[in-house]
Length: 314
Image (tube, rainbow, N blue to C red; front, side, top):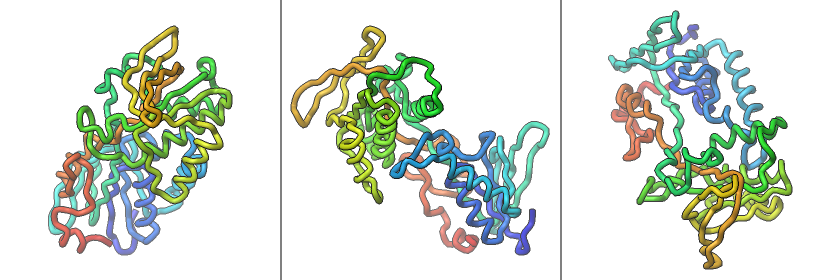
C-alpha cells in the first residue's frame, strides 16, 4: 500500500467518523492506516436500529462506507488492533500497532494522525434509585438498541411491552451525581426510540421523562413533534425520583412539574439516556500524539503545537 506521494495518515478508531476520515484522505490519493480495536468497523453506529431524523437504517450507510473502503487501494484496515506506542520525530509519528495474535507488531510512519475514538456511556449505577444493574428490565440506551433490533427482526424473548419509560439526562446536566454538560444527542435518540416502540407496538404506552428537550439540528424539532403528536408518545416534564419492582413490572415515581402533581406509572422497561463520556484509552492516546483534552477528557480540536501540526496536515 503506497501512493505516489508516499504520505500516510493514521486513523485511530473505526467508527463512522474514522471510516469517513479514512475515505476522504484515501480518495484524495494518500495512504491510510485505519486502526480499530473491535473485530469489525462501525463503532456505535453498528449497534443502532434506525436513525433520526429520517428513520433510515444505519447498517445501510455502514455497508456503503465499508464497500468504499474496500475499493480504495490506499486504505489498509487493522481490526482487533490497538496503538501500543507512538513517538514523534522531525514531524513524523513512529507508531507501533498491536495486531491480532500471530501477526505481531506492525510499525507505521505517519505524517498525520486522526483520533476518532468515540465514546462510552456514563455508569448509570450511580443512580441507585433507578435500579440499573439491579433490575434486569432497567437498561441504558445502547442496550435498548439491541432489544429494538430483536423486535425489528420479529424475535420476541418475552411478551411485547405494555409500557416503556425513558429517562433523559441520566448523568448529564447533573452536578450532584453526574456531569454538568449536555451530551447533545440524548434528546433525539430518545425520541427515536420512543417512536419506534409505538411503531412496533401501537397499543403500548411510551413515556419520556425530561427536564427539557433540545432539538437543535435540521428537521430535529419537526421529528420530535411528530413523535409526540403523531405517534402519541407522552412527554412528562420532571426527573423521576424512584423505580420500584412490583408484580413483575416496574413502578416509576416522578413529578409532572408542568402540572405540579406527582405521578406514578407502571411499565415493563425503563431505558436510561446515560451521558456520553470519553473512552478510557482516549487520554492515553492524547498524550501519545500531543493532543489536548478538555476538563472532562474529551479531545479538543486544537493540538499542543498547532503550528507544527498545521504544517503536517495534508
